[in-house]
Amino acid sequence: MGKVTPERDQEDICPLCLFACADFFHEDPRRSYLRCPRCFLIFVPRRFHLPPEEEKKRYDLHQNNPNDPAYRKFLERLARPLAERLPSGAEGIDFGSGPGPTLSLLLSQRGFPTVNYDPFYENNPQALRKTYDFLVCSESMEHFSRPREEWDLFLKLTRKGGWIGIMTERVEAETDFPTWHYKMDPTHVSFYSQNTFQWLAARDGLTADFIGTSVSLFRR
Image (cartoon, rainbow, N blue to C red; front, side, top):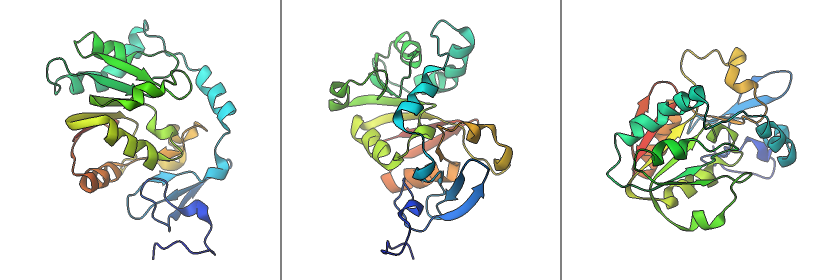
């Protein structure tokens, strides 16, 4: 079980752990969802993903204003607990900073200089050629169609002893997936549970802390 064969449809290969036999999990009028029995990722098959130009049009509608107190408060869910764990002067990168970079401001204002990277809005390859004391990724991992590639990149970008801070709504035991608001966004294609992140932590030798239903902090 788990081996790729020519007869198998390639879309059931888990995009996070590459296990080849993901199971049917759910279907709605727009698309279907599979779940990996090894890393527990729930994901949308690639044939349902939006093309990049349509994906960006959706992101352009986001009202991510760094001067919006409500948005800053939202991002504090990740910024505050991460900052409490960082050594003085730690430097980091906000991966997937979006059209209105704000998390980097919150961290920089605390004395933790943070650069931005975003494939659509801040596509600066030079930022990916360095290593950092921490990496943050807020409300972006759910958009990754190839999360294995991004996660491996996160590990390369983060120095030993550094932190990876993720904010994405996790699938909880009590989540009513058919009505879950988080899956309604057509750009959301990868959904993680605490078990998924614990699997990654165990595989890669990380420690993991979970805060609320959306923040996950990993120590390399």
